Image 1 (cartoon, one colour):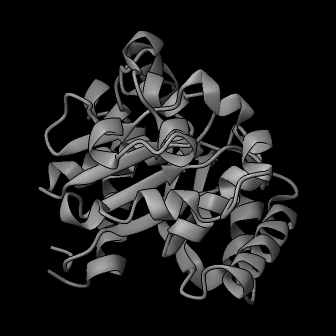
Image 2: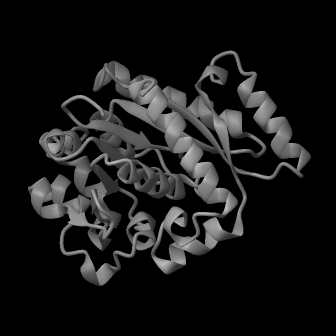
Image 3: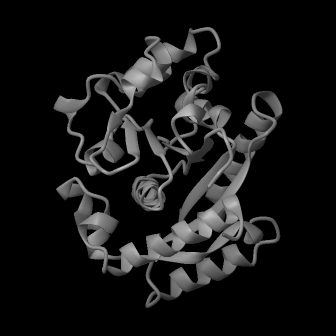
Length: 263
């Protein structure tokens, strides 16, 4: 088990459709299944993590906006997902205007870090599902986090996106969060029958700087992974035998090994 104090991870990619939310939700589910206490913060205004965990808009009384801009307490904003040891701070519709509202607020980059200050008493891991952009919401997540987890689709120009994200991480580290590091890069939506996927994977793994960060586990394209959110369930719960579920379970084990070492 991790030591006292929550391990906070920002799950980030400025490009949408790369399985960022799917990774957040399923990693959190797998961690909770091992007995870790887990919190997901849905910082994406689209609210897909909330929906994918069965938390519809009508149930979202408080959310990430309230934490950052209305002074809500974490204890009040966090709600149970129905899975043991797994809570979520949901996204609400006010989050769509948060970038504009934050621009004129004092300590605009550190509001999420301040709000999560007491998370260590309740949670072992906090996973922040970031929007597909590098704006103030993502900067708040990077300022609050100790590690960055990057889901990366095996597609053309994947490395160019990594370079841009790296520049943002370095800027946040220099100005706001000197402790920020990388948890790793997870290759997602891979199709081993597709030559491009194999070529991109080889390029990323062979990269002088990024290659050492890439997890051994690769998440395949899988229809069950795509179906699960519409049922309000992580794919690990929806169909544990699916190839995507098994891949996320393997990834969670690898993630824990990097975080906590050999059991």
